[in-house]
View 1 (cartoon, rainbow, N blue to C red):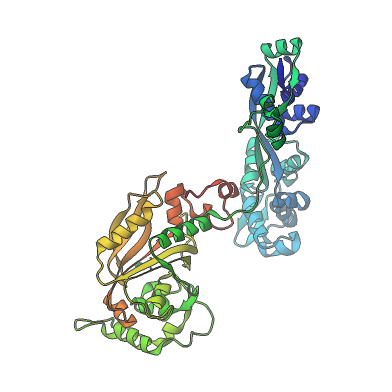
View 2 (view 1 turned 90 degrees about the horizontal axis):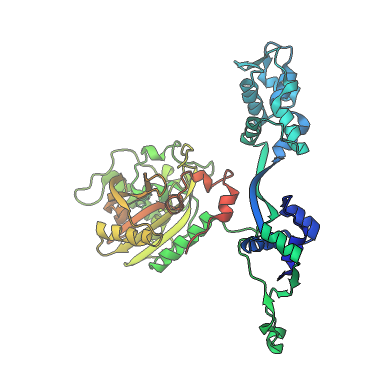
Length: 498
Ligand code: PHE
């Protein structure tokens, strides 16, 4: 029997009685792991070799785990520092046990969990009968470092993993044995057939290509993973959103992240005593107020707030001062950019029709939860035309979301101080089926447009980029794609589809 060289080499080191792992075969043949795996699969297809697979988990310590291995677990250090004292002040943990910052919290919570004593009223009362010398987690750290985890209880390893002290690598171990046919083939003799792994110009000119046997590609063979840097999926999706909007005829807006409240709120007919303008919602910056707001625009905006717009206008009966308008905040929405553009102060006076967008970061003092962070990306946009209706708004969203495969958007009437009518947008989460809010929109009110000098209609929106990602990829926690808790494998493997 004639077989490719690598298969012959693998057959030569296999037996029918003992399984050999791919790693052993690699060692014995000197071939590359991917060559051995490829040959093994080919031999299996020829029924000469049987391949069995087992999952293997390797443990190793994280940097924090290594640190505790040398310094001791924080809770054990706390116990030792407090031993013999009935009311050891937590404040002394830094001096006596050398614990500081987050380590104090880590020490206290594990101290209590392990029953090393009682933590109460700023002091620690260690239990004299506790024995941190026999701490199973400390022993497990040492076992992991020595690569001897067999005797360690699974739940202790789980706990170390939860504490972020241990990381796990999962891999598949393949073992090979000769089948009966394999034994027969080896006894009868197998010879290496010369195979070529690529077609060369020489083969073509000499005509040799007619006689050579080509090695088949095995697309399932394990190959070393090559991991370079890559663009974050959030950024990739932002780029795609930009391309879609440019394709729909929109121009991109640019503007400051930290801006005067005037552009963020006042131009939007948000009364200065509106709850969303407090520090509970927005981040105020401790910097000098913004100079040089356009005086005529300030006057018109102030008048809209005080008296309203038009003969039936009423306005807010609450105070309005330029001092508040000049204060600088991190923008809570990119509608500030829309105001700058519509006012003619960003890219000059604009005559209808116009379409503008931005895909930029906004900042809100929200409570962190699976769908809220302190910052996120907003897809801002507006269309200016002589006559617009809600149908134009809905049609624009339908066209936009359809490019991402989302065809079941729902609209809910809503209230914004700056738009009338206003709509919230909802989409269905592909995994949970829940309706999730994906944006907010409306037609700007006269109280917003007239002071800006705009006499025609403007429809506008702010959509959350992260929510679009949730709908397209099925994430249910925004922290999967933002911040330090991101899953690197997910970021490496998720493809943005074009
Ligand atoms: N600024 C709104 C938000 O952040 C979005 C929006 C923009 C709504 C423009 C209507 C018009 O939720």
